[in-house]
Length: 345
Ligand code: NAD
Ligand code: ZN
Ligand code: ZN
Image 1 (cartoon, rainbow, N blue to C red):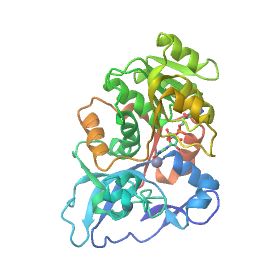
Image 2 (cartoon, helix red, strand yellow):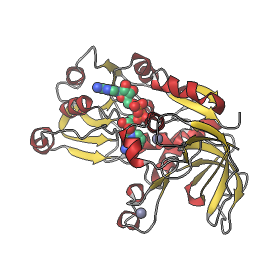
Image 3 (cartoon, helix red, strand yellow):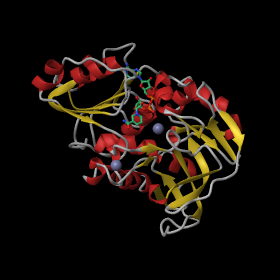
């Protein structure tokens, strides 16, 4: 089978021909039909400091994918051969303090598909059976592939007191921020204000239901938020940029007593005026990691299966895996939202 490898600790990726894996006890073999590229895959491609400190090549990468169960290992009763599945990318231990208190999403021993063990940019992949989420057979494989990052957005939007009937600022309109715009719209939030520096992505935010988009290179987002909220600020900040300036602006644009839910990951540690920005303003801050297992998958698929959220407009580009260089370059340039690879084409 063909598989896209990080074969050595250096920039780039290699498409190789290897033997398909065999599922062991508790595992399944998935025939991958669609796999999308995440920002994390760009870090791995570029082999930046994060990738170099985290990964041990050789490894098949890719952690957003969908396919069909081709075979099951000993003892597996669910899912069944032929089921159409999406995959939760976090393989959890079930034994640590976080897992034992129901917080599997912050398992202390998490292994991530395509980062710590072989992932889905391949014709076939073996994963733990429990990581499979079975979809209706008519759900397009491309949509099923992006349910993993969609879950990040769902987790952020639904954390704390949610967004229903609340004013919301969404900082960063990458794929996950854009998904959050659509979820906030479907959930009755308003006004929804979305920021980015990239006009291509701001146009998507507008199409998906943002009431106001702000290019922060052209306008001060704090002023726009204050103007639209009677000088009060928004009740909820949803942070998806990982950008230090955007995080400070987001906190400034938040009403005293509001909720900050932060998914974006800055590349370096950032400094806070803890008292001035959070403590004395009574802000509740939520760090959002991954997806709650399996609550987020239930919430997210309820939105997608019922078509209250349509993810298809976010699928901007598709490529056979042999053209992976073009696909990665397209995303790197920011002129794309979700880029899908077909491992079997
Ligand atoms: P992305 O990099 O595609 O999106 C980030 C967006 O922020 C880009 O569109 C960029 O133009 C925009 N941006 C940059 N500077 C900005 C500024 N000053 N103001 C507003 N927007 C600005 O990433 P993504 O895949 O959508 O992921 C969003 C973030 O979430 C990333 O930081 C990613 O690392 C992080 N992430 C976290 C988790 C988690 O479990 N916590 C999981 C996945 C991704
Ligand atoms: Zn990812
Ligand atoms: Zn654990």
